[in-house]
Length: 501
Image 1: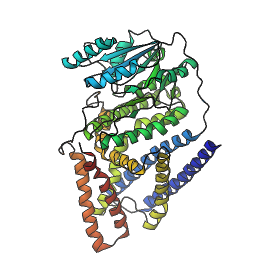
Image 2 (image 1 turned 90 degrees about the vertical axis):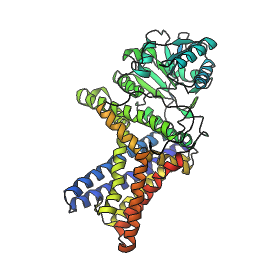
Image 3 (image 1 turned 180 degrees about the vertical axis):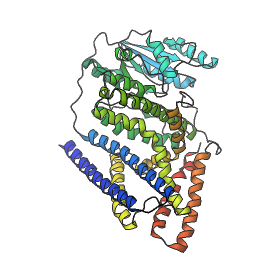
């Protein structure tokens, strides 16, 4: 009963939010249609509105997953693992610190499941790392797999070892992920009960949140994804593999030719292949594995660059698939894949939204063309209600408001990374798979952070000029633009908050 009430309240909030969004968009479109402007203003105002609609589209995707997560779902069937339910535990590693790999080996060996075999997949190119892998394999009597080249990165490594495996299932753990003893006993019953279930994905949470501010806030960002988005996607038969903390049916992986080696996020691209072939996926929202968060801005940006580039590469595949074989996915799956593959274009959307107040402050270039009173009456309800739903949902999972706000700061600072990665992904150029560094928090040199500092500096300049103009002009439209410039300036000042040892 309590769950039903929770669902009804949240559903009602989302419905009201959709009504508020609709009113705001209609008002924006009407004023834009009626406005008189020159060619540049026309182009920019349309791009600005499209950026707003893009943000709303992704917000709708998130809120729809919130509603799905709050519903009562029938429990997935389970069955006790049979004698043939053997598991190959794969730990891919490339140039990882020895202690990090050793901790993962020990926890994998400690899994309370007898029918398992642990494989260390070392793909290192440096002899010192190769030697450490040999020492660990000999010390703990586990199977070491190596190969002569780095073809296909992590995906190619798993595909190469897949040819040698006979186990029914494979469990994949990144080199910094430490599963708890009961992991396999909790996950395998789902796979044993459904022969068409390709994999069971479990959440990823960080155990080093006290290492730095970046690590702490990264964990909050993970929570948004794993505690809400994943459950919603799973209920829509659209949950994708996250590359670690996952158990996969070997026959399903072989059915689609192994992991996709054409993208740097091989996990999501491989899930698309599985869903195309009629395989199912499941998300089990129980934390039985803990890993390491990026501890400084350099590591965080490298991680985000890989995820963004890989998802945009997936977008290219989806566009081709949509126009060649649209029936292979259900409509709700197409929607979820659209949300997933386009998310990292958000860097461009944010860039245009940031530019609006700045262009108005310096050059009087309008972006809204709305009467200030209408803007307040239509925008504020939509904006405040969306914040209420988002922050209250996170507070229910015991995440503080201040840390959720800091997570948004960190995301906004990543705009230059997302823009660069989206271009690389579309053109299919740039660096391939990169391992997130795990050598402790470091202060990143300011020259490396020049894109973020440039954005911050432009906002400081615009805010200063806007305040001077307000002193003399006292214009309501200018006041609103100065307010947003100041807010964005505050958000980008996070570069100094996060860039610490």
